[in-house]
Image 1 (tube, rainbow, N blue to C red):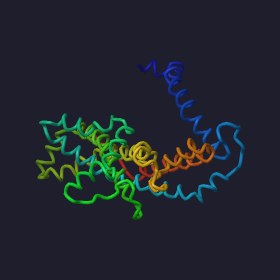
Image 2: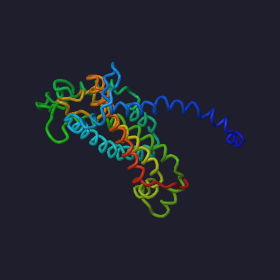
Image 3: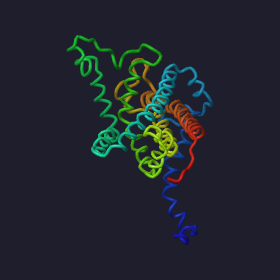
Image 4: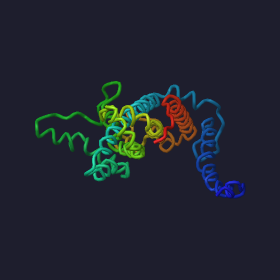
Length: 294
């Protein structure tokens, strides 16, 4: 193995497929998007360089303001809710013997289902005349317009979609935390119990410090996923009513594939990329993690 690792030709051969895939699938498209963001480009004719006009248009785009606000809301809600719920579920399931795999599979199941299908399912559940409202009518209760109410700074449809997203993706965070917790030596818990710690204190002083690297990883995944969130919103509301449930990904889709403003859509994509990089860097800097022997 040491001889193989010292062989530069072997290293290049093993790295070449991943490097080529990264270059042609990720790096080159990103560079093209950055270039198109400075152009007027409709996909049929050649792109025409217009400088910063697309970025100036971002400043006056009312729909973009809704999209940016909703994306930031999703970012904060997703990171906080999935952190708390994921840790809570992981802590419970790692401390039970009977039914652990059953409950784990049930909670994780929505993660592997189609977001498009789930979006249509929840759209019918929150329909004004079907689903929950139809059930409430049997008790003479008039249900709200779950996906159409536009009152408030963060409107009701955004809260509904955020909780649906939490239901779908909390299993991913739970599995990451369970994998990290299962690697902690039981002797550490036994030592803490001998020192008089309760289960709650053991979780606080033993479990949390040891899973902090996974917390940073899970938060980064949740943050990036929430910023590029698309499927559920597009299938449940399509960004409506009146752009009030737009996020950056849906607004990018509308501008690029509905109005064929590929240059302007590329500018939105560059903004989204910068936000992902900034948030990931912020999480890695402020969620401190240290390596411990487990």
